Image 1 (tube, rainbow, N blue to C red):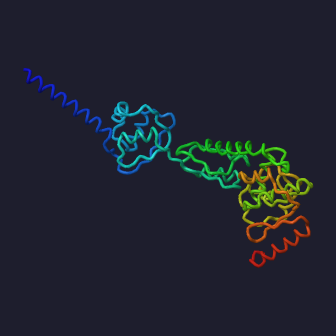
Image 2 (tube, rainbow, N blue to C red):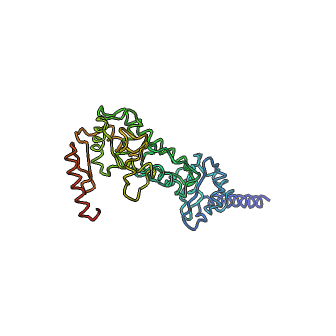
Image 3 (cartoon, one colour):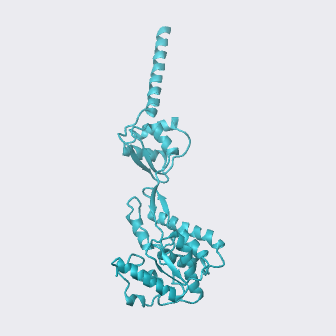
Length: 323
């Protein structure tokens, strides 16, 4: 009987070891995913609900088995929400480690300097990995920059981050403004910076352009910025043709050929560098500028010099067959 009892105990022990070994093997063995998978764990998910997602995506064979093994072998760290890459054949142990401490996939949406809000809206709506609707943001409230987002994130959440970035930038730059700036308020700074942004694509010219417009404002001269003619017509989209004489003389809240001072608001979303230029404009006596044919501009302090520069520009354009 003692011998039989020993055999039974040995068999039971072997069975326990077999079951335990199989339980642990199921935790560390390769999983069923035949190829790399992208898995999205929604915000607020429990480990149980995450296990259901993993099973549906084919990353694990059984949500229940995964959950039982995770309770025994897994750490106490909470899982993250977001989009994760699960490697082909990843084990249950590897997958939990990814959910607890792995890097969430970050996707990017970029707003270039000088992109008007109507195009920012179109860009957000065109991003298929975002969800929900979003209004056209108020002009000048978006900071041009690259923003990360997660698959399934709401468009409004991304837009709010863009707007907060602009608010934070203004809050940082405004206290350090130069006494030379003509901007009386942060809003005026953004409005003038938007014009500077649209007038030059050369970083080295921004402060000079800002200096010219600052001089014109001090003297009560019209700014005469072509982009302010276009904005009421297209809301910042390319006009696609030459500006008409009737549009140059049109009276509205934006056309700086028909009014002195700043337009009623920004005509685009200016970047940080243009805002800095307006808050710290170049000290210059220049009042005019025109394209120089190289992508930049030539500046003048008298109308006579400016007219000569304009003639040179027209000659360049005629030589190119543009006139």
